[in-house]
Length: 349
Image (cartoon, rainbow, N blue to C red; front, side, top):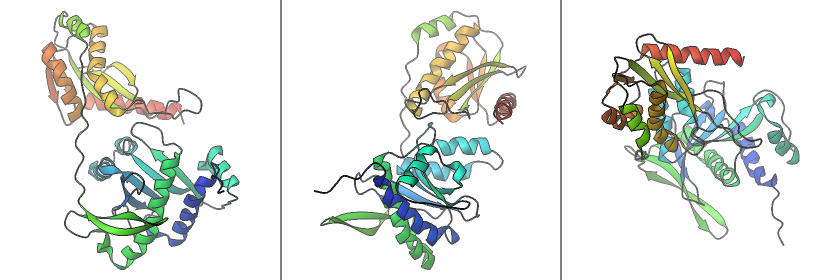
């Protein structure tokens, strides 16, 4: 009777694939823009492979999950240069699996325990395989069994596609707006892979259901409307929070309210994306209401620089009668946000 693999043994194929990737060094001729797909033979989910390392700094393979992952990755190239915080925030919101080569110091005891139990050893800089799962709003974390298997499939198909790309770069672009996707069919006990041309449409926006707090609406409606102007933003707080030992940490989001005239920070409140980013965003209108209630202020105008935040606050503005405007830049808020982030960097340096 065949023995079930141990918890550590399920990782062996992944480490073997990484050894072959290291020897192949596909980053020598592929860039992160050279994307192809892999369909998970177990779930039919699509992952889109991007190879990093062309600059010789960070050698990694990311598998962006589904159309959300693919189009999230493509949106990174629309971020203006010189905004590393925004780039990091967007990257952490993209669902992906990542395999990279790191220095020994980057591995945790849990990572090293797997390496030791598999009887493997590595030495030198950027030599140690590291595997992580990225989920929107959450801290990069250890792979689950299903993720281990999908990442192994993706790495093995990279070993097939990368040499062919070297000979013919058009292999991953079989037609206008089409991507090459590696798809498997089962033949006996084996998987047989083939190329398929697929059009990957942008994902539909996730619906955000808003249910305003009627009591808070009535409370703020009773306040006299003043001349005050607020600037509001919601952005990722760069320090992860772990509520219980061993539990996956998450990145809170900061709801910041700034006085538009003085630039003073009126309120900063942390929101949790632990359940999901969609659930967190659905709570934002009520959190703004609660802050107005605490401040005992009904402003004349609220300014935001986010299209999503603008859409979320429309129902609040309609109920309360303040002017809601979307601006490309909010200097007062950006200064306050920069000050907060600089303070956090200084405190944690």
